Figure: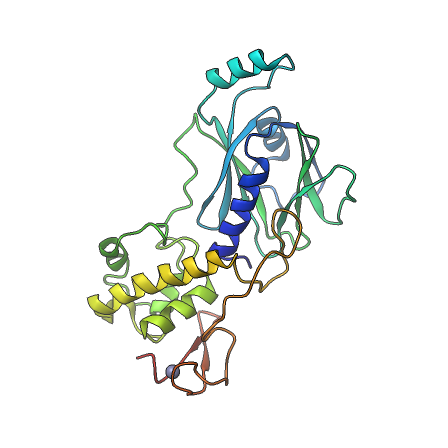
Length: 290
Ligand SMILES: [Zn+2]
């Protein structure tokens, strides 16, 4: 499952490749599962729109779209339309789920099995959504109805220390479960939660409310540090997805505890332990983490 750093990497790749492009037409497959908004509504919302930018909200990919259908006339006509519709009017939201991919393809490239949507771009290239297991979700969000898409929770890379600490006040759940709670922090998944807790020296099973202010301050720094490092490396390559070019673009962050059960702790040599918390694996060092 792509985590926040992977989604950030994909988003940056997509923004570089398709920002400024106009979606000319949309083909949608007959499988219903990937569509949270009705297929016809998705097609009608995307067609004729210009992609202003691609950004991330938690683990969601958000395409800001503007304008009505672009006139086919010359540059002057296009500039006029751009000025008239300089604010995004809709958003296209993509959640990759377990195996979803967004690939920018040349039109001649073979259409992969499990392709559920193809957006034909004005440049001739195609943006394709492929998802074998179909846990991914596509939807559209009209900005005239409300503000921008909000998946809930706060961005772990943007939240200040005080706000971060207050998320855990009075929470009786294990700190690991609180870190994974998307209503608190959006986008922190299993790998980065384990790695952050290791760096902060906190055991995953500790009750959130019982952790000192000082330790939570360390955890705040650790979460940001781990996510930033992984983004700098282009996300970890744990799962079966590719970057916006369709290439395996990811390098592996060296995990200090995640997936290292029984191996020696890189700090003290103690064997890393694995426990199951809310049906997810948690990895920690019993000496370095208290
Ligand atoms: Zn250790």
